[in-house]
Amino acid sequence: MVWDLNYRKSIISEYGRLKENFVSCAEMKAFLNIHPEVTKAVQTGMPIVALESTIIAHGMPYPENLETAKKLESIIRAEGAIPATIAVLHGKICVGLGQQELELLATQSDMPKASRRDLPLLLAQKQHGATTVAATMIGASLAGIHIFATGGVGGVHRGASQTMDISADLQELAQTPVAVVSAGVKSILDIPLTLEYLETHGVPVICYQTDEFPAFYTRKSGSKSPSRLDSPQEIAAVIQAQRQLGYPGGMLIANPIPASYSMNKEQISLIIDQAIEEADRLQIHGKELTPFLLNKIKLLTEGDSLFSNIQLVYNNARLAAQIASAM
Ligand code: PSU
Ligand code: MN
Image (cartoon, rainbow, N blue to C red; front, side, top):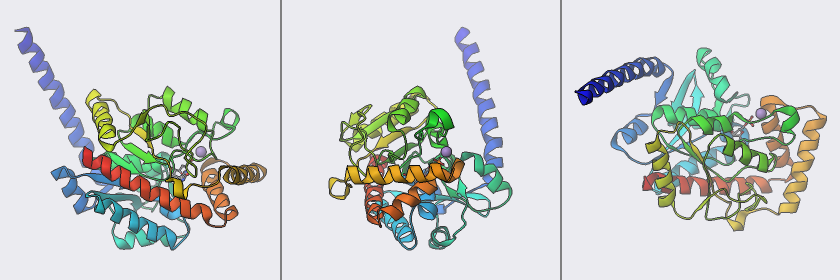
């Protein structure tokens, strides 16, 4: 009898949940444009890897950005997974882009940067936007994709105890169920504080085949790995365990740049310090700060950093596809 009552209660609440989902799906569809290949891959349970578009529009110059975007997709395909580059186009979150759409992102000079808070505005105004890690996670999650490869994620900026500049990417990792493969974070950020923030918000941080958290251009940051795993299968099992617990959040998988492409630590530190000093002097802040610093580093390293950047993203796409396949 008791069982019967509980059973009926659970049926009723499940029905309520389904009804809610149905309404939100219908409303959401108006703003979501999923490529048929991605829809099919989700339905048939194929491995899929999401990719962001800020890296195309703001992270690299033309034509390297377009070449990299295409090569990333082919690396993911070569590993047996389906790529889904995400961007906002004509007021829709597009998951899976065609050739022309990639070209538009690579060439339009005033493409808005779209993070979580920018999405409602861009959608309502039917604009374009290059999605950051946070916004790409949102698009991936809406489409049913659980793995996403990028270069570096945003984090706690140096001096954040005064400026409170903490990237929305970190909150997204705490609330959206997508695992992000990055090469750690750049030392434009305060790496120890970024790791503290992720710990506070319950975000698992897994370093791949290393005991030290990587710093994007270099394999080492001086911060210890919160946890280390050595195979895509083990990482896939952690993602599955997180899903089964019903946690709302995602996780950060830090994959160090291959040794042959890593940069000289002292040289890149000096350049990053110089870029930060200039940003302070010019009082750059808000959403402009990260693109300003990235661009400054690019100019000051005369393209060396661009080459390393491209290689580490390829490396991340490969690992992400292997994890997606292992799931
Ligand atoms: N850090 C990098 N490379 C990047 C970015 C950050 O090393 O390309 C981009 C990513 O799209 C990231 C965004 O999501 O900048 C973070 O911006 P903000 O710090 O304004 O949240
Ligand atoms: Mn910021």
